[in-house]
Image 1 (spheres, rainbow, N blue to C red):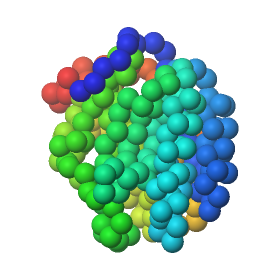
Image 2 (cartoon, rainbow, N blue to C red):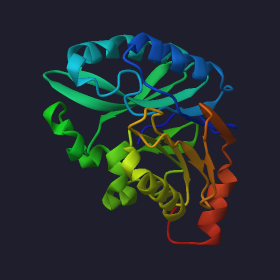
Image 3 (cartoon, one colour):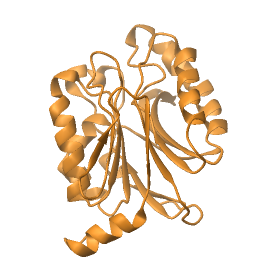
Length: 247
């Protein structure tokens, strides 16, 4: 577990926007939404939102990671940005979960559960389950589950104790109800906030949301950005009120 500074008031932010074939336009859209959030925001964007799963131009998508990483490092000044980027490390290509915080990349790990219906294993190397962990930022324990990883109960146990679980996703429209049910159940079971961000592309659920430790859900609807104040006392209250052993 990695740590940075102490707790202060934060704003949870869930994004919902379309990924187009124009990578630079996608990046500018993301930057615009980041700029619309207050300082000390924790912002979750959709999985691979800058390029999509653009297998027809995969080399270009991989190359774009260099620009994306540099730009998001700068954009994260006084904010925290969570998303995934297609990135090559050595000879392997990963769908890399990243957290940018106050001008630094403070966390990264490869997606540990590749989606078989999307044939992701043909294009990406898979990360290790044990890499799915908790990072502490400003005194807040944050975990990331990338899309398909949300379906694995062992990973829920692995991140038990997180105050916030970020879920960047490219979730299929046919399974929208699964996304709603799983994110709500995760918030209730792990007694934490869940900030879920799916793509607005037509093949996706077009459903992003912020869920409270009590399971109260605020959906984006037609909004590209929704915000909610992070209240650590809500997490502490649920864990005292219904003590199921989560510390």
